[in-house]
Image 1: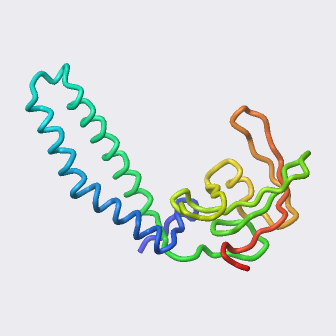
Image 2: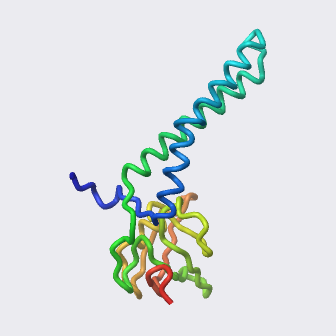
Image 3: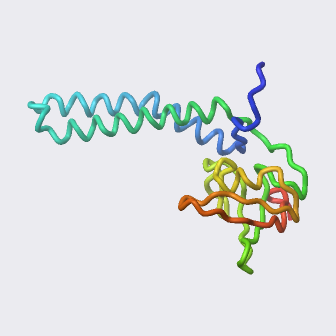
Length: 166
């Protein structure tokens, strides 16, 4: 087995992996059949240039194919289980608390794949500007990242504990 680079790995819980695999299986099997039937039914209605149902079905087909490719990419690079974690070091699967420079408020979130929906707290992707900036940092470290408007923001790591740890 060839080892992939760590930044390409998506760590997923077994539940998330199973859910994404089931979605992929549905879309690439029955989902494709259903949309093909919709397209065929709309095609039988006549002139395709003015056939709203046909164009809507073709657009839906494009979205399904896009989602299939997205799911294949996620699952191809997925590892099921717990990401290697060290208490006090920020990484995927960690609950992180940061404070923004110039602000007394603290923000706590789970650093994990966006596919880990259902977490009772906000989820930030390790690939986001903030996630990438704090990945590997230790409690007490500061990290600076760029905002979409071009300005930069500095945060201090207040806490980093494995998700679900009491």
